[in-house]
Amino acid sequence: SWTTDEIAGNTIKQSDAGKVLTVQSKSEASVTGFSADSWVLFNSSLDVTITPQSSSSKFLLQFTAPASASSQRVYMKFVRDTTDVGGGGASGSREACNGATYTGGGAAEQLAGSYLDSPATTSQIVYHVHVYCSSGTGYLNRSHEDSDNDGGIRGTANFTVLEIAG
Image (cartoon, rainbow, N blue to C red; front, side):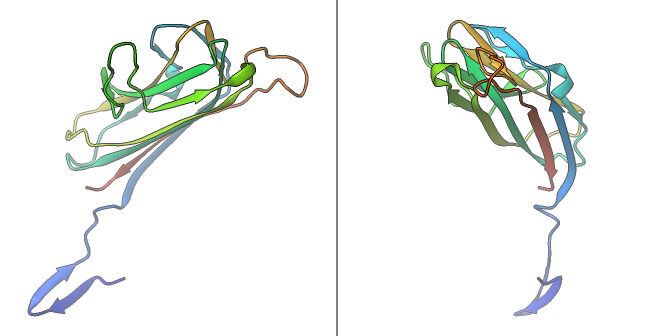
């Protein structure tokens, strides 16, 4: 790695771009159930409030959680304040999301998503995780049946936000 070098009379300096400036990570083990056909805030205890150090900062959002649903599909998306970020374009009854899982037979599967956001502000922002299932009831941090045997699990959701110098 170089810090300063002379190439053809030009001085080149290593930039701070790409350095991790701030890391916030939150975990939540409580079981959350949610009804179908409506995006809901997963759990406000996972909300990450941050004031960017620079308007060129980027934020790497990473979420994982065990998920299950009677509908067998669970989706997640990131929301900055009140704006969805990073999901594909919704079309008809197709939902825009950052991550999805298929939980065949009601077993819990890993629901995960990541996105590199560029909010272009130095004002305080709040990142949230919203969840959705297409029918029935969805659950995070447990299997659908929640049976007291080796088919039933309890887990922990994790949401990490890294501020990266732009």
